Length: 312
Image (cartoon, rainbow, N blue to C red):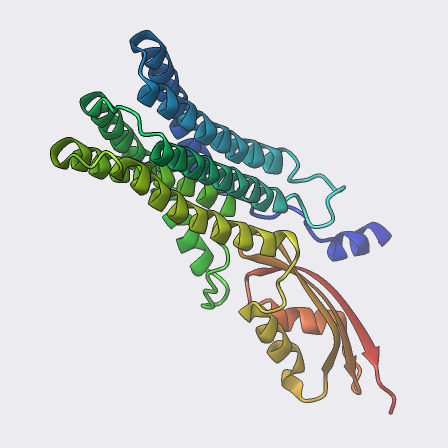
């Protein structure tokens, strides 16, 4: 009897932490990135091309970011049932995204440093060879963006598609989004590089290469800061301004008698939340009654409800 009662009140701690398609596609893009990186580094050493060599090591930083993304997926999956995590290991995805955002910022700073140095100390540019590198890089990154973009879209669609019709838009996979941003950053630098090389070759504006490098780095820095803020919000549990909080208040206080004395909302998965709430009411009400009121919001997946009766 005791066992049946305990089983009734136990709640699962296994939440949705990522998308399988995103993990598979990230693995494919990582493999391709490593191959292209190796080819460019070897070719740069063989042909004495700094452009090829620099781009190869640049690809290496993005390979590291994709590695972080994959490790976050694997860790979250392996520890999905680990009871040492109070609300599951869901934040490892946000942590992976935050780490990738920092790496993206470092890449942008390195680009600015190199571009300023090129402005101060102009170097001869092998336009045709550099153009080939930029075009190959652009094709690869457009393919990678297409691969990861599909999973990012699926992540956003799934976060909008549940919750009793309340799509809040806060459930995208930040780990996957970070990998996608790295591919977009590479594609952007390739486009800017091609434009600069065309200007340098046909207009004689060799300085354009360095200027465009600075502009590209500033755009990437803006992306990195935005991603850092978004992931930090999750890591720091800044969730009390999401729309579902007001919906919780409306559901619990809908009878005109119940009042919320204390409320905490924690993100535990992709657009999934845990609710810890203390309710005060004059009438005799049970936690199960309030839980039923909240069940219409499918993004609420874990409940801890305390009810205190007000005698006054």
